Length: 166
Image (cartoon, rainbow, N blue to C red; front, side, top):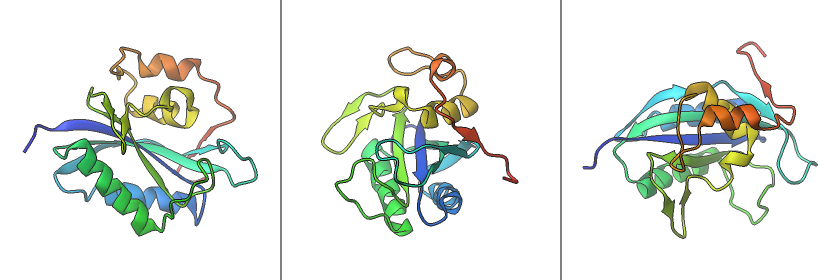
């Protein structure tokens, strides 16, 4: 068994009651073996990337400590997506019932046919940076950039942090 690693996972949904999808995904992530949740951001309402003829997204970021390898964690997250009813299609930025992306896995750089970490688009996505900065404002990426600085510089694109009663 390897040492515990802190992993950050981006969650998103814009189909089938997205608030429920993201909340349920967080609960399921809490059940992943050899792992435990250490932080869960607020929910954020954001515009879709790509085609705008789809509903807005609900996004969040969850931090876990895990002793799973990155690929074992990816397998567990894909099982959660499948449980939610995710169907993988070729429409890269199309609507989806649930998306669980490994944003960071410790300070590791991983690049293989199944996984790229740090997530290739995270520095350009307000729906990743703002919730990540909420739960880990002093986090430093493997390339030495600071989440708080990236989040303060990104265009918010109308993202809305949701309150519990919204």
